[in-house]
Length: 326
Image (tube, rainbow, N blue to C red):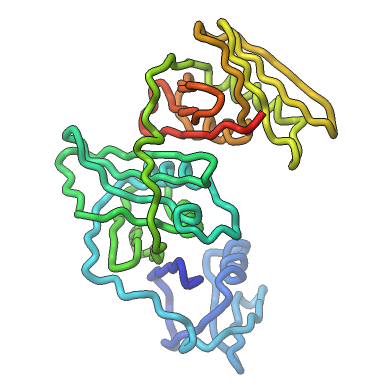
């Protein structure tokens, strides 16, 4: 545990002398990961030193007093419901692409909103994440027969969600639920427990509503590769790229006084009044990598309003990005 996220697991072992030890989790993991055999011996020697290995390989690691190890909360009366592991992992991965500044203590920046949505005869769980400059929304639709427990909107630390991604596999079923002030994920013999953040998540529904304007459909791979080329000249002080939308044409240009400039154009279906707007290409590349499918839709109203991006076929994920000043 790090006092915010805790892991509990029960594993088969040949126990000669029952008892407890406390050890540096990261170093223990690294030793086990690199160990050449499946069997490994662990026992305590004098003065809380822990001996790990076999007759040919030995580590001696400083241990700690197990009585001083903080207890995880007891997992009781949790209203679990089941979800496929892979879709949940993908939802979280797409959400934690957006990470706030490490020194920002606001709950809605440090955490992601988790909520249950029931509308139009659909049952969904939704994860929403923001850093103030962009926002993502990712949904998972359940079978109508699934009885989702009543849950309020909660904010889960992104750091803890990152650990959940490592915890989840690409197949199988996991159980998730809430208990008091904790979010719980259970898989086989392992449980992750995450302390929720206190605070309010901003209302976001109006932000993700599309303007009644012309949608621009673009090949996802083509725009991604274009933006990667335009990002070559970016630096810490010059991160933006200018997007010039004109009749059936998009011109993307980047200028960095410290290095130089670049530009590239591509044909698109566009027949509206010209739009000249700037975005951080890195953000758009991350959005493109999160969307599944060959085509994406850009909903751009003007140079001072947010751009909404989603897949033509993949409607489970949507992202909003604020323009930069030109």
